[in-house]
Image: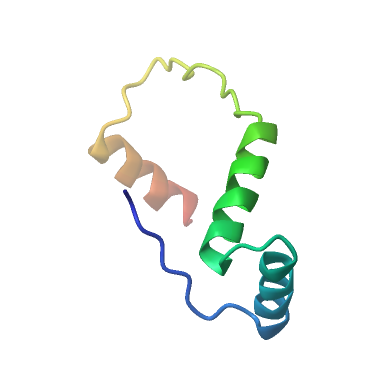
Length: 72
């Protein structure tokens, strides 16, 4: 199973999470997993439009030239 380490969690969030875990008789880790699972059920994936086709191929040379022109 994969692992996740969360550092520098704000104190108020930690206290809230601890209270929620105790209220549901879970460890803090179990509570976070439950929260993630609940959120993921509501998650709606983002659909991006297909890539736009250009007349000019976007080569590194073309991009560098455009950058230089844009800085003038």
